[in-house]
Image 1 (cartoon, rainbow, N blue to C red):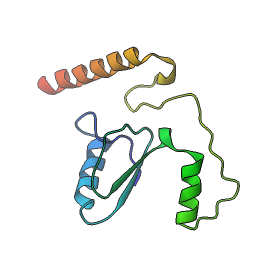
Image 2: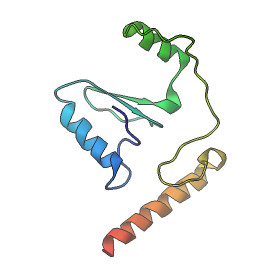
Image 3: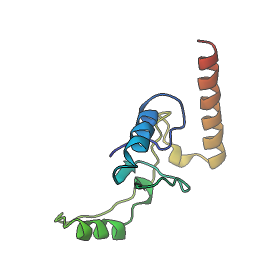
Image 4: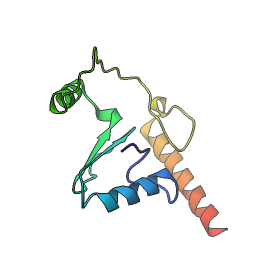
Length: 117
């Protein structure tokens, strides 16, 4: 399964839909959820979360062996940037403090918008 974020940061959108689908299906099947960036500490039964920010060449080799895949010339290249679903800034070049400030501002804006509907 492909998703954009997990667990969802804001109410609404693809993150919430993905969370609902994963939570509903996981008791009955194993799920591999692939997202652009995964953080530690997410633990759901029968759910394997793969953050593309943490993929290694060894992990790709293991996948090829486990699933008998025959990709030719598979290589892993890491790019010095991050992808954010909440703004168009390349956040790889800003500090962690600035990232936290931007996330806080976006969350506050979302809460304000919801209260004033």
